[in-house]
Length: 115
Ligand SMILES: Cc1cc2nc3c(=O)[nH]c(=O)nc-3n(C[C@H](O)[C@H](O)[C@H](O)COP(=O)(O)OP(=O)(O)OC[C@H]3O[C@@H](n4cnc5c(N)ncnc54)[C@H](O)[C@@H]3O)c2cc1C
Figure 1 (cartoon, rainbow, N blue to C red):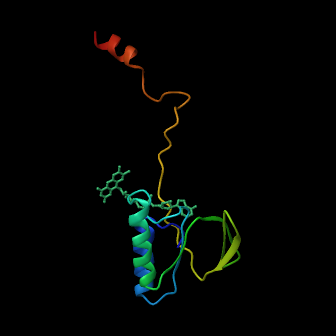
Figure 2: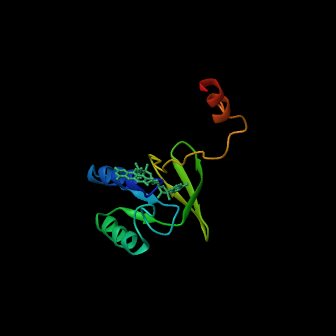
Figure 3: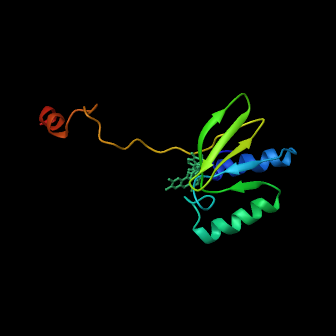
């Protein structure tokens, strides 16, 4: 599982409950960092591990190689993680940069039409 956010951990728990050997590769130092502070993220990681799910934090996945082999490298040491299946749940980010050409007419142009 790539991504230790809300959906990634839910999927990891579901796959683990089906009897699969699950490893979560998470980018940040603690799980669910968008919702939890580091202390709560640490406690969550302990609870996840207690279910038999492996967790690797600070894991910046570089490539998925071969038919069914995932290679992840952390900022400190490169390591590979063999897998039969890879699931990604890395969230979404809005593209909030300013558009070069606005799709909507300016306020000044619309107000002159209604005046
Ligand atoms: C302000 C706000 C309030 C919200 N309130 C609610 C609410 O009240 N109720 C509700 O149901 N939903 C709420 N949501 C929505 C909810 O947060 C999202 O639906 C949910 O977090 C999506 O889960 P996710 O796992 O897809 O993404 P995320 O929670 O974003 O998790 C993705 C994780 O993947 C990690 N990641 C990113 N890239 C990589 C990588 N390359 N390798 C490994 N890991 C990576 C990130 O560090 C992150 O932890 C809210 C969202 C926001 C922004």
